[in-house]
Length: 193
Image (cartoon, rainbow, N blue to C red):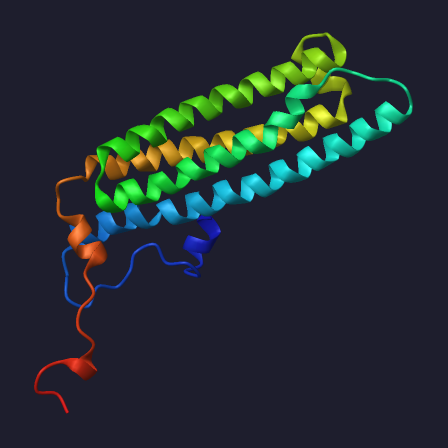
């Protein structure tokens, strides 16, 4: 994301034709950062889906070989993360409408999802090897995949909370007017032929 901004492929500060106020440009740049974070959260959903399918295929192989293990918590992974992606939409909508209640749902969801990620990672290790996570880190390939995905999800959660707090501080400065304001096109202005 930094490289996209640095190479000016995805500019974070838009050019305003009618406003030269740098404060408005700064506030708008904070607001615009919500969209890459939202896209990142949906990308993580795709990664969780791949992990989920990998676990299901591996479980089918284990069941065929007669080594049945109790790992039912895998099957809650994708549905719960789908719900967490829904509240990510509240993040953008709450910032755009300056709604404190929608942002409180976002904060609560971020805390809940962080707890879920920590629980899921440690639960996988205890269900698989019945040993502490230090041993899982050394030995289990699936645990490596899981923990790296959890770390990436955690980074997006931290970025989401941080930027949402920054947007929340800007409430009441009439940024919504500038975000939703679209001037009349030159073709339709009065007296222009």
